[in-house]
Image (tube, rainbow, N blue to C red; front, side):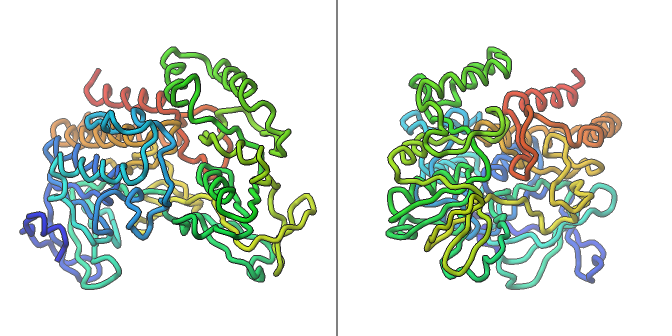
Length: 468
């Protein structure tokens, strides 16, 4: 029995359809929409779909809301010191503000309480099947979908239900991307991915090598500087390290003010460089490599402490790793180091194990979905993905408007099918569109968007839906 029945959610009494290809009976859920995941994107999807009059079944593999922000969840990348890297006003849902008394950059425990209050305020739990994972999602009967579920962990029988539409919100920061190095299997030290890091005690007193210069990699290097006996930080290239505060305000708020004034990119880049020259100066004098790109061409790294600890000698910057050997690591500049613990903060790859990759436009098998607005797959107007974004701001507002757009497109299919078909063609012509300036070509930047450009694109799509 789903744990969600504890919240008074009644068992559905659907019509039984003919058995599926596995010989299993299929329950017809009529016009109900299936939402996969009850993290930030899934919760706002449930809320917006129900507000637009749709019945919703949300399947969550864990026993509570919050997704990756719930540190109790097996797939959560959250560690003890995790805080937001985008400030509170640019992170919160547009119709449910965070408390004014909260800090500019709330702690992960505050984020979890925020999601729990959001779910309770909008009475979302009654739509959620907790402890239930999705096994398969298959298109059938035109634009409908067979969704097969089971209890998390593979216990109990599988169950298949047919839905009018599906919104996928299973997150994209849970499947570790691990690099390969010669000799890694023979290395006698400890190796872990950042997804397994939870507490500073894991670093305490050890010689630690952190690999990766994303926000997590920089955070862990700073923690190692405070806890480890020695810390090396390996990066493939030079990066721009943005302070969290500029002119006494959170940096993203200052940047947003410039965007609102439509300050050209080149001028914003010049202002950024000027700010860095006034504060930390030339980072190469600390031993950090010179960036091989202009600012805003990679995902912003918001960290005010990395340069501080590098400047104090507590973090030693090193280049890319060449190979491992039983007693240590050889760097590409020929140096040898002898870490006891190697932490790969090398990011994550999106995974949709329950969907055929071709459904999301992954024709070449790279694992990269090709979606209009990073949300809508070509040829499947009743399927959407929410939250598959790497914005230069918080994610929650963007996921909110993605689900609003999906809900209104489903209403249009019901009320004006011909116009809806014309709108659906945008997912074909618009797949692969970019909503950011020039960025590095790497999996880390597959879903990079500038939040202002992206929200303008969503607004244009909403206007098109309404015939404006």
